[in-house]
Image (cartoon, rainbow, N blue to C red; front, side, top):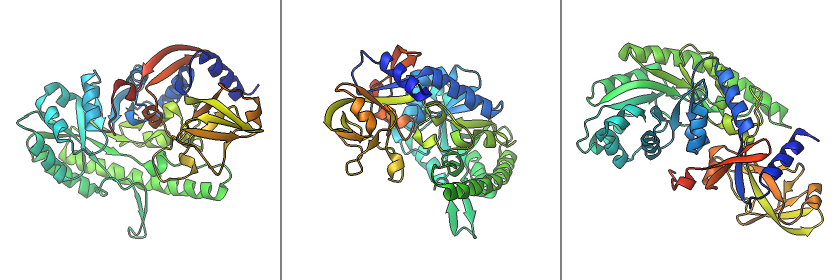
Length: 400
């Protein structure tokens, strides 16, 4: 029996009395992945990207482990909710235009102490000030450095279009602008190198592409390490008591941690290890989050149909954004139908061994987006469900 077959047997036993569709998290794999992130971070704390987890109980579980500290959130409303729930170090990793949220933040000393907001433009400061509604609390601010690699005089750009602050001088100028305004305090710098941390460099069957990605990433790491260090020095000249410099992501933890200028690492997907993180030379993890769909039809030889399945991930459309049939091994989509909104046909020899009511286990393409489809996660240890916890959705929260 292969390791995957053994996992399937465990999950089938654990979920035998549960009706699918359902989602589970294998806690043994989750904990092993957490330990690996800490090992790769080399002593620097790992801040958990909440969008990749979207379950308070699992955020708490990871933060209870040595080596994790703080949350990186994705909306202001989520940040305030988490802070009110007892999380005392929440970094909002994206700019917000939530005026009501800013009014709440500026009026509450506890929230203002727990939540740090992201700024990369003076206009965002104007919006916050206009939203204060009399709230006088000092707003903690993190500045974001653009990490993209620019080649040929900027005519070629590699990396996400995020912050407009690309040079050390630009981010230092904004730091000065913030310090001149009452009611704000610069406490950190963030720089997320998604083109390194979030792009696989060992794609099966694509050796030339994989080599090109590795060459690009090596060049990007070298360029960013120097520019990030210079940016941190420039900002520290303005803000000597800077609290943190955040960088990295699941795919680049050890590389980013090696930079002296970085004080903490961001990661989240590495806890669940969705399918988009299969193609990396820098690490390998154990898939811990899966969902099961029930077999509801047997249309013919070598075919079964499961209920649901059309759970595509965000990003540029493509086959890699679809969930992948994982257990039993050997199932694939019908090219004419793909993953359906209400039903999904699956092809392959294992279909002939599946009966009506059996479960097919899938892996989502991305991590936390799975939790937008399910109210609860069943927690599996060994071959038993030892707990069930709500996702954000299960708590009635849909932040985006």
